[in-house]
Length: 134
Length: 134
DNA sequence: TATTGTTATACTCTATAACTATA
DNA sequence: TATAGTTATAGAGTATAACAATA
Image (cartoon, rainbow over all chains, first blue to last red; front, top):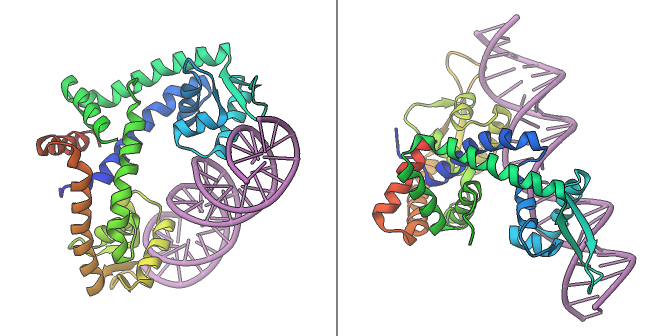
């Protein structure tokens, strides 16, 4: 077996992980992208759509559709920014916070299952090494 | 800084790597996907389109377009399978083998640059851990 | 003039389904 | 009947450009 390309390894590791995280989030009616957006919107300081988009590195026009979807599921709500009426502040609803918390536990479990092939020390190390590269 | 999700780390590590591999392959007129296909087709045993598609985990209809592109660039050639005229055997041209070899060196260098943030031992370990997960 | 959210649009990547020629 | 290649088509996921409201 030849040494596989790093890009291949990263991509397929992510694909295999997604096979676990997808079903893990399914009971909450969201996918991984929606969970990521919800997570960013769940931080203590309320964010505008644009601010949230920047944190995720996605376009603000893409964020519109993401917030639309989360709002339809009653996981987040838009409200006008008090001092700047161009902005929408977006915050999780009560239900959204609940889904965020339970989703986070489900994601933790999925990651753990994915890393189960490695000794705990190596799993921690992998995460640390990736963190240093990103 | 909260601990980032494993999926985020894998995805963004791959994005950062792609920022290096993309330009590395550009002088050869191919992108990462084309390099991957060319690599598979460059193995000693000649492969049919379907066999190549299976090795890469992509659909055979997707492979048609990939081979079309590589053929237009005169990097591979289709020829009929001697014993089964339904099959196209696809092999790199002389030029294709040259691009493959030089592209591989460019990819090696790009990966090395990407991993430069880590001590050599850790870089090797990262690759090994990913390999065990995929 | 610049920024925010929005909409319309287009582009990339990929898969599915149906066709054809062969087996 | 089944398989290999092909084509047409559709669906994600995403970005770009233009617009209205507001700053």
